[in-house]
Amino acid sequence: MNSKYIYLHTIGCQMNVYDSEQIAIRLAASGYEQTASMTQADLIIVNTCTVRAKAEQKAFSLLGRLARMKRDKKRLIIAVGGCVAQQEGEKILDRMSAVDLVFGTQAIDRLPHLIQQVETRRCRIVDVEMNENPQIPESHVESRDERETSKFVTIMRGCDNHCTYCVVPFVRGRETSRRPESILREIHSLVKSGVREITLLGQNVNSYGKNQNLCTFPELLTMINGVEGILRIRFTTSHPKDLGSDLIAAFRNLDNVCPHIHLPVQSGSNRVLKRMNRQYTREQYLDKVMKLRDTCPQIAITSDIIVGFPGESQADFDQTLQLLKTVEFDGLFAFQYSDRPQAPSVKLPDKLPETIIRKRLQIVLELQEKFTKCKNEALVGSTLLVLTDGLSKKQVSDQPVENGQDVQWTGRTATNKIVNFYVDNPAIDSQNLTGKMVGVRIEKGFSHSLLGRVINVEPSTGGLKGVKNYAA
Ligand code: 5AD
Ligand code: SF4
Image (cartoon, rainbow, N blue to C red; front, side, top):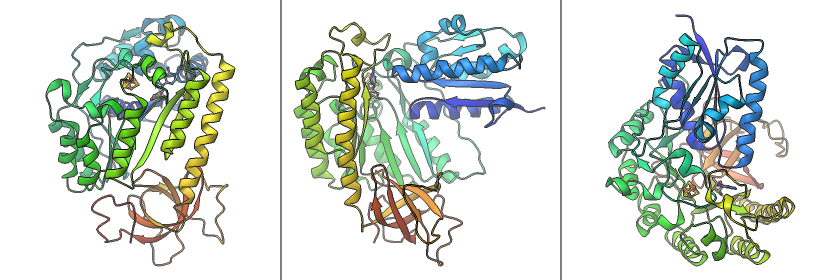
């Protein structure tokens, strides 16, 4: 069979990255080989995100470019999947005449059939059916030659919370957890293909299993912690209201669970948290942060903030700044509030002018940058365990490397900090570090990364089984 080529463009969160992989695996079975070149492609799939307005604009501007490309290549098939597809459905076909297929977030299993229909009948199709009791599609594991160190594993889909700014419950549907046996099966085959770190994905992993009477999330973590060959377990995202003492204890009791939690706070003001329907107070959030740090002193805590939520006063914003100063997060994603068509906050009064929102975002980013840099600088002189992802993509120009020590690798600490490092020890085989756990002596701390030199490879300090942050 002649190979057909698929170009996959993914916008948005890790869940979309995972879905794109699943799409690629399914379409490989229908004869589609992945290409990195848009012009070579017979089929282009744009996997979209609509969580913020900017992501949606990105999708439409790419589709505009693709439409122009299709003028010279009539047989090119253009498909739109993911959250914008789910949200807009048929409207995408009306707006973009070049698009052949729109498929929603629950249509991945039907995709090969849908593409075949488009190929044979040259018709335009929309499949955005949303099931009240969705089945999670069985995950497929790719057989690969190329070794990958770290992979995502989706453990649940959808969300039953209704944070008022959020479109996710409308485009991803009801919260549904995957059965533990299915998750473990996938993890076992990933380990067999050389994966050493997995990140469990869900909109709100802390409530895993609850509405289906499966095991709890900490119980699932315990099972995964027992899988031979897994060195690091991460998960995202955690909702503060569902973070219980059993999960906090997992950071101490399960040796492969990484000491890092992403715990979006969104705002430091109780008035705003209430209007966001977050179901916790600032005090409850701070109490959980304290418990996490008491239980696991080395834990890194990162968070999300939305600035400029409708009605956010200067006093509310000051409360957010105060919370940032109290917690000193290890990292922060800050976003300008944007209206999403289906989210309830669209209807809230007192929208803030863009100029104020932008200014507040700048203040938050500048404040956080100080904390991140300071925390990274405090690590200079320590030797951290780093799981190597591969060669660093850019020879980092703002991180001068002296005397030709320019073989730069990149990886992450257990606390999820990016470390670029070089090898200047002839005893260390610098050809073969991908997937290896290495001890790196930190020499510089920047705002978004650390720089150091490798000291040893796969140190047998007990840190290899387990995720201990520090190497001996
Ligand atoms: N406007 C701005 N930020 C948003 N987020 C979700 N919805 C919106 C919105 N309407 C942010 C939240 C969430 C992250 C994934 O995106 O901070 O945690
Ligand atoms: Fe959106 Fe809230 Fe669900 Fe997160 S928990 S996906 S912010 S509704």
